[in-house]
Image (cartoon, rainbow, N blue to C red; front, side):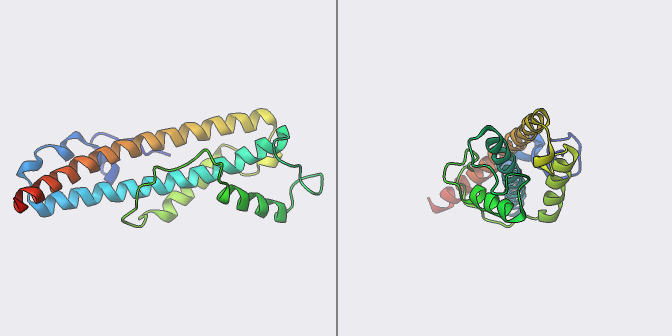
Length: 183
């Protein structure tokens, strides 16, 4: 999964994180500045969505780890978890007030534009790491998979923060212009 900025790349993330994206803003027409801000906002929304997908998978794997260490109750059947038990786990993971994977609380102004692409990418990564059936993994495999998934989540979060910084620069320029017009 590559959300990293590729200098000279053609993806929106590459344009938004190119240093030239925020240079010479004073020379841009308001519409062009808004378009850049909108691109940055959309990229942030898409990265936030991807990050949430990763958090859900991390939470499921953490639940499996907690189950194995006795921090969570054993499956009712005493063997592999049934579909009903997996649904219960998913429900608990999605509603758990003690989650460690919280967002920044930013209000999203747009819908994710790459929902299917991000979902497929997150699922591919989980499958590639051999984490699609956590109950069948050995403890070492589960631990290694969790570490790798956390690493990917940190990378997505780091890039997302960089996009938020770009978005803020653009928003500040628009605000400065608006306040100048009102004065």
